[in-house]
Length: 220
Image 1 (cartoon, rainbow, N blue to C red):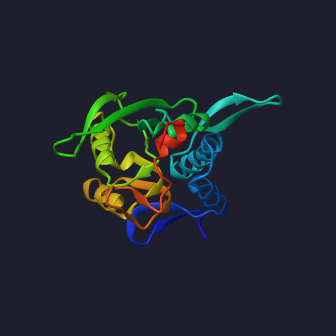
Image 2: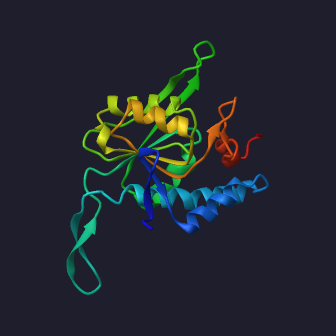
Image 3: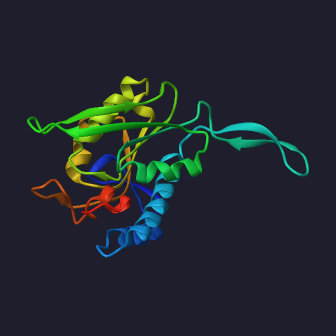
């Protein structure tokens, strides 16, 4: 079994098919998992998603000196990848991806729901020039897809090529995957699980609750 498998119902989705990832996700889902453990589990999944989503980056090298001799050593391509967090829950993933890619540039997109239209509107866009960079967009829960589609548009508006964007999410709902695929068919979504549905409150079921509240330790 490959470690990253295409989802049979969503050609642009990639699911991490690894028993350790599945076990960590189970621990993350449990309602009694305390905040400190929730953060540790999220860090593990963030790094797993980060590694899986960058498997296809072009290889590069740079000269280094080991204690014994000089060599051309493997390195990430330049310009360095960009990591974009959808605030605030996306920080639960992006903060740990920097451990894997310390030269990455960072960006944030903050969104809120318009009370009249119920659509996502931006209150903060802090993005570098993304032209020529691989871009990892982080949002741990892909529910309706509205916020993510708005974020992806901001990312493209700042120079990113749609084919260079990867979405990292811990759990995705079918409704969100369908919406993202319709709006951005070139964007690949990497996830640890595709759950069954959204409920009447747009929560993913079975899900894990509010990832941001659980990660930051705020009431949920």
